[in-house]
Length: 455
Image (cartoon, rainbow, N blue to C red; front, side, top):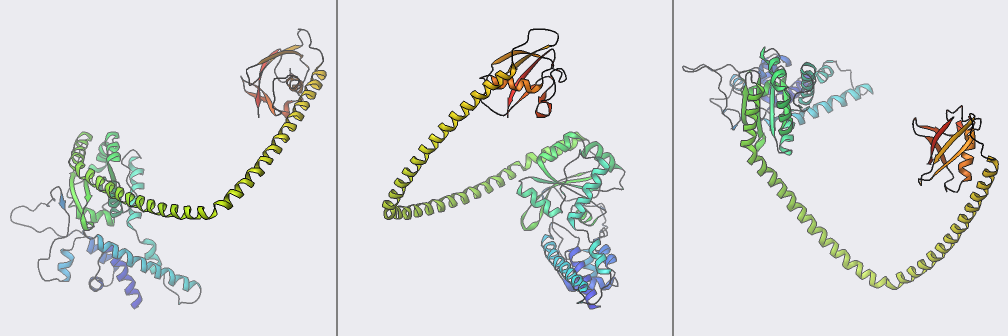
């Protein structure tokens, strides 16, 4: 039983990012250890405090660093539930710790399941397995949002990354870009109009893809809802432009709430880019300077090592010079003999090939017989060689394709032994399978033009 409670506490910590196990135990106990009810009450929006003047939701000004509010009284469970909105940016450390604990919990669950399969542990109920399957990590939520957005509005919109918010924020910092955030409210009547008419408009999507890293989330899911609280989203459709700050916090640069035309959205985003360009350029230059300094140090170290190795090599060279000279002289003599033998061998082979070609040309010429006179059953064939040379001859229409090869072989125009006769329009290769065809059967009668294609 105690093991089940510990698993619930670990799971609650992983979802909420809380680092205090006693507080998690107190919250779960207040909800009769109902995990879903405890998470729902923790992530639900805090009640708005009414004032004598204005009861509307406050919106953080541009360039505001988002962080949790300070305590106003002695800490208690009710106070901590109300005054502890889950700000992802300011709670990044808690999320990391929670993720580590969740990883340990998952590893323990897998180990327990493996021992159970081996018969080394008692049977476990299906509750832990079901919870593990139903666990939705931030990356899985982001991927699900991307799939749903593409399904509903097509693939012409911004290229949302399929990863959690903090990973997307780190990606934007690595690429020296701002992070464009879109919070999707599926039930709001203006959202489909905004997505189709503005967010998926070609100029807007192209500008966002070129200048921003895009992240989107649905407020129906955990991370999207938490980000709506962190950014104080009061109207939908809702977009924001943020950038990373110190201590895993984020700086809110711009909020875009309500319906906007593509022109209005482009104007807002262009203004944000222009205002933040010096900061991004300075960050990029600083990183490049660090990289340059690192490369310079590496080059200096490499140069020192090279100089040291050169000195050692010269010393070895002085000691081994005579031995190397002897080996080189022996190697030169050996290569000279090999080259001489190779040259003689090639000369013999070339002479043999030339003699064989001459004999073959003579044999082929004899086998061709006399050239027939022009007539209805005579085919005129023009042969083009790779050198540009042309040869033309008449053949009986009943002559076979192999006769054309014999004719080419009888000429002193081609040194290659492997080649094919090819017609150009249409392209037909008269290979071995067509050698038995007559010129008429091959469609080359009454005249044809072929070229030699060396293999």
